[in-house]
Amino acid sequence: ASAVMTFSAQKCGICFQPPSIILIYRDNSQDKTRQRIMPVRNFSKFSDCSRAAEQLKNNPRHKAYLEGVSLRQLQKLYSLLRGHLEGQSLAESLEKFQQEETIDPEEDMNKLDDKELAKRKSIMDELFEKNRKKKDDPDFVYNVEVEFPLDEQLESCTWDMESDEEI
Image 1 (cartoon, rainbow, N blue to C red):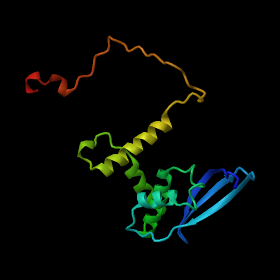
Image 2: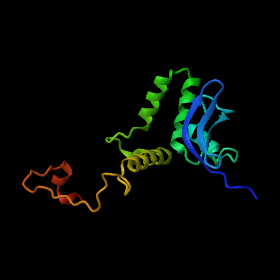
Image 3: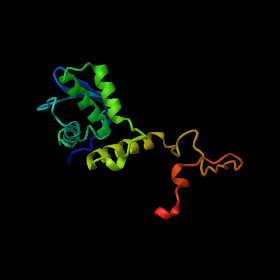
């Protein structure tokens, strides 16, 4: 019978030489902070960062340790490694990743393929969770009601003015 091992991730980063993901975690069973180095193998500048992140997170050797690390963070680390392999500076890689992770409010998501749409939805879900007020938050207020002033001019859109005959 093996004891249940509980780990809580504290920091996760990437090392370029040799390519590896480094996790600083707390081993709760022994009450110690430890470092785990997970070598990155068979990864090139042509590799798929999402696939690599999923494979690492589901790897039986690392799964328990990576429980508290989001897939998105692992994807970012692989993206930085890929940028390094392409010869980009860390700043360039970070900026490129930031651009890819930013939702453009003007973008027509109806024109995206399923993979890109899923990526955008995942980004929006994560942003929603990050900004969401939780019951434990100090400034959490239950059942907020807002009165909107009626005397202000309502903003109209062009589609409000189109005739109903086109339908």
